[in-house]
Image (cartoon, rainbow, N blue to C red; front, top):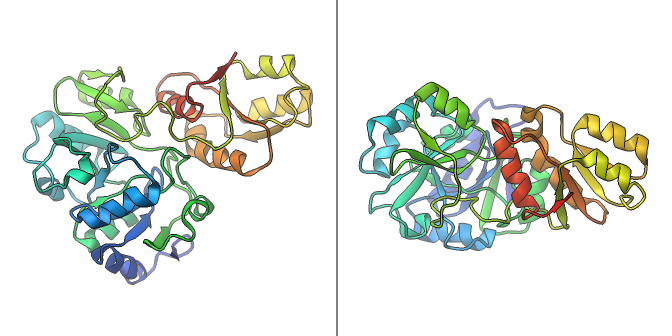
Length: 338
């Protein structure tokens, strides 16, 4: 697996990423940057290439993939028709961190969609990703670049930790840490009102404000039409718990917390250090935007250092906080310390 490092210079971009383009055309896998998290990409129409994604990630075949396109015209390769509401979403939010679940064309392989009659599609905001898809001249199936159910990759060490010796992945196109740090928002657009299948980097409130559409936010859907719908997902290997009133818990258990790793707000970390300097804290920021960008990075760090268990401070369940809380709940499999 070779690294194409674009962190310092994107001059002559096409010539730098062409070897990775050829790898896709040969049916191999390439790890690509997006504005959300890193993706493990393959030609979406190649059953053998897509099968490598499932094998490499140890991903169950019942979990469908997201297909990434570089321009709106490519959507016609994947779906038969879109109604006026979907067109409005596309015009307002593509390119960007919004995935739409739509009725698929028969040409889309069943392995991509877990034998469903729908396909999840998005157009990434990251320009390098769109350029890469353009050069590949085919939509790319690209779930997050990590072992299934583990914390998504937002930096090169995360990728190397999971896949360093994997021969099916030929290249990593590395662009630095992503803009948002969590996955795209997913809407089921097969019926109206639309339904939220996954909270993500694009706030539902912003979609409603700009479209005036009715969107159902309940997530009690039995049929898994999109990634990230399992109870345990985005999870560290260490035992992980979420804590609502973290300072109260630490004050009460300040001696027992020694050896724990606490992922929390910057200001919370400062207070914890005053309570017990032996407690390990990993600050993930103060604002929702900072927390979103840093959460996976901090969980990966917490998993890599010695400690008994990981405690994650919860955030307010509003706007972007809905997506953050979705990740915290799934990282802890819903286990909470009160």
